[in-house]
Length: 96
Length: 512
Image (spheres, helix red, strand yellow):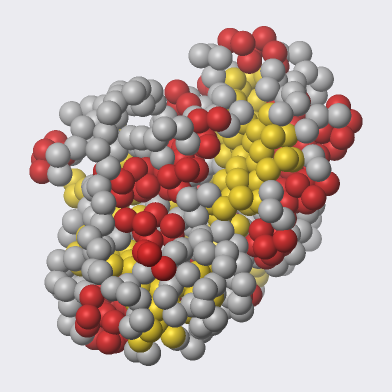
């Protein structure tokens, strides 16, 4: 799936993550900022990557600002940002 | 070498600094010899000086140990003025031995380390940019962290030999009689500074409020003071403590506070004449509120409240629910102002408060202590010093000291954001699990299996589920996942003393 427009989801409140998606041409590139990057950086990137792959997004630049979100929150914000970036209105139920 | 809480300690440093590993929370009954300061004899008529630079030149020499108190906290104007003068005078190789370091001092300490002015530090704690700097190997020698009671012990033993103490006070007369209660930048109890005033070879007071002689009540006495320096301002009153203490509305904190209260009320210690110490966090303040109601409902009064004092505690004093407040430090304006007005709010020094090598300290008489934690592990060991990224960002304070109470309760949320508070192994052991009795989270409590009496007393309290500490740890891990292990270098940047002066853990430089 092609990114049609830059879009984001999520806030900078604690226990949330803000995910911004922009068009890219070199796979899934993640720029992550997090206070827990040492302990959970790999896991956060893994959740974002697999969620995007399930939505068939292969080329995208991701900017993620994490405030200690749990995996379920990271997944939800990634899906929401993706729907906005793809300009789709129907949820991708199979990913949920 | 490993100590009794299974921590590998740096053998080379231990030998070089003549340290033993931590063995036990029992202090026993050793006979010890205290030290006494040098006295430069004077009739006291020539103590007042105008310039910080002049007094620094007259007192501080290369290689000395200098000290400060942290009662002004983030409103401190004294530390930076004095350190500026010391750096500018080109003095080197000092040991900095304050009662603690607050954020407002960080940049100046880093500058002094870089200039070679400070080469050793002992403190209760450090946070922010200074903790980060030290955790990245910025100081060649390891920082020695000591609790407030242990600092008093170390000063009395001569482990810390203070050459010059620079003590800011909101009032003083020309001979050095001073207290923390009157003036512009008041902070109440001078508890930690009283050790420095009593044991330093030279005592320099700095004040913005020179009052008529003789000044009373005199917490610091003219018999202890060498110089009185008049400065423009010793502190910012608005930054010394929080203003009016707000009652937390955070449902998680309220749930924890309520459970802490349930644990206290259902323990064998909740009876007429009991004593307690609470901290200054949101949950601790809420505990005081709940405890007040429980005391009214059960017609129970406390004999004393101890430690760092807040307004909710002095309110209990005024209400007659607490007979005495034994006050080593005041955390807010209300508590500081109350000391002036209420003779039952007794100023105590750090030795009286918590020094283990004593003829009895207040903490030895304490029934209930409510303490916080950054991490607790399944051995009940507590970390209040390093963040879960391994960087120094805390202070021992009175944690190890108050934890010797008959009922020591750690109140902490199960998780903070994505970080588990209850973990398999704490990053740094500060307070040993042997002195911890109950851990309270918003999900329920865990009781140290050493305390079968408490297991019995607390197992059937309505609304207070009892878990094993392992169950709480697993519950936390299920929520947040398993973190990747932290990476450290071999370089030791800090040693943590237990309150008896043995080493309970070390902190290594972080790798990044």
